[in-house]
Image 1 (cartoon, protein in one colour):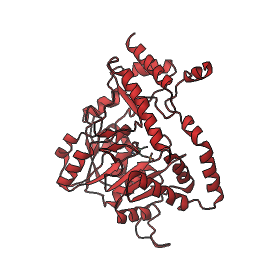
Image 2 (tube, rainbow, N blue to C red):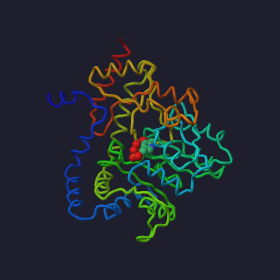
Image 3 (spheres, rainbow, N blue to C red):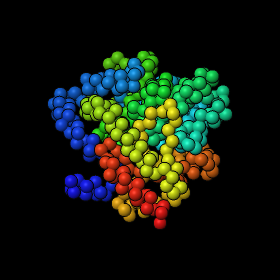
Image 4 (cartoon, rainbow, N blue to C red):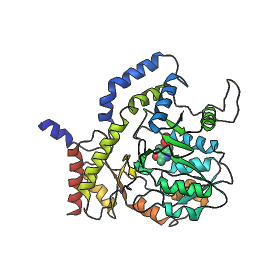
Length: 377
Ligand SMILES: Cc1ncc(COP(=O)(O)O)c(C=O)c1O
């Protein structure tokens, strides 16, 4: 008992995959062994199996595995014929990959500030950004919290726009009972190892109900080959490989349970941290079932709090310290400092606390005690 308690109070990593991996160790080893021995490593039966399973999980017709989440976004945009002259509305507050995928296609980025409570794209500010050139709404379910899809779907209908979801951080999240990654015409996701459903390397996928778009994506990820040796479009090389697919199949069967664990831990944080110092806690809308890819708090004392936690052997992270519009890669867009005030405020105040399936309630209590200690000094 004493040993277990001590282990709980060892340094707290920001993320540990060890408890998850311990529960699937045998199944993953078996899948890798079979994959190793089967002599077929690219575009084979394990990819097909995972694609079918992931499509079913999202309640969509098709899933197309890709090399990573960025490529999945690029392919989804290309499939919808998005290119130079087209405008894409996306969140100002997101991971930079979402922006890079849009600019890679030559389309124009039109960022919209987040809602100050949910931190997701502010649906009340989308329509003022729509022009004749707007083609796509690209919501990102950031941190595992679904965007307000009811409002976004209504806006898309009113203005004949296509929705493409970036679901990289929200595998299994739901809005009004419907899985994120099933709302858009095409949806992109990432299986980067730290994601809720993570591969043992890079990986990504597109989900869609449109057969012809899925067919396009299958060609595009494989140099544009339709029939063997016949290149229909100038595609890229971005295939989810057999070994990653086999591992993802194993992990997918645990995803709902792991997401529930994340919610339970998040609820504990929410209860313990309410009213502590000047902390702003994550807010879920009533239609949302979040999956807490990350647990983000905000505080004006973020830097000092982070140092204090680090000195108590608690590791934290910042998602993200530099917003996309302030990255050098977008200097030419001149979106300028203070252009997106709320996004900049979030970047300056947000702090990601440790949270992963298998983290113990004792560990969450320890983090909360330390945070309370900081504010009561
Ligand atoms: C919101 C978001 N979009 C896109 C990506 C890109 O995914 P990847 O790193 O697999 O290319 C990521 C993750 O890294 C992400 O968090």
